[in-house]
Length: 115
Image (cartoon, rainbow, N blue to C red; front, side):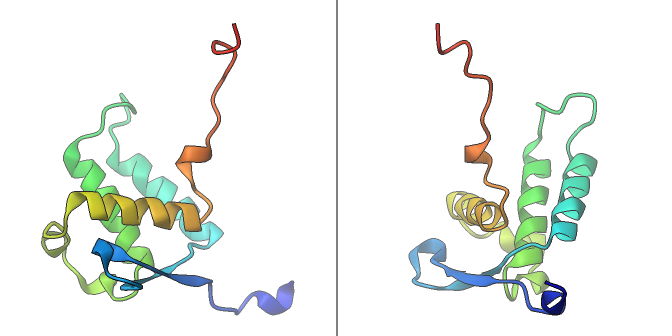
């Protein structure tokens, strides 16, 4: 496994805004996932984690896009705001899934449903 330490992280293409294979997404490393989690904690209000402003949601999406999408590191937040919100959200979801952070697979307590 040590021989893989200097390998490039996996990438995949994604159809952004309906354009076939228009962007390239890089998988996050374990350290980058930890850094992302730290960043999210710094952006989301600590007193009420359920409360998230639109600005903090955009900040989280833009952080993730800039870290993983080839060529996006040089795009300003203002430029990212010109893309459709739905397409940015789908791209962010795809990045999270590709990096092993698929929030749709998080299982909660189903005991209330089993009555």
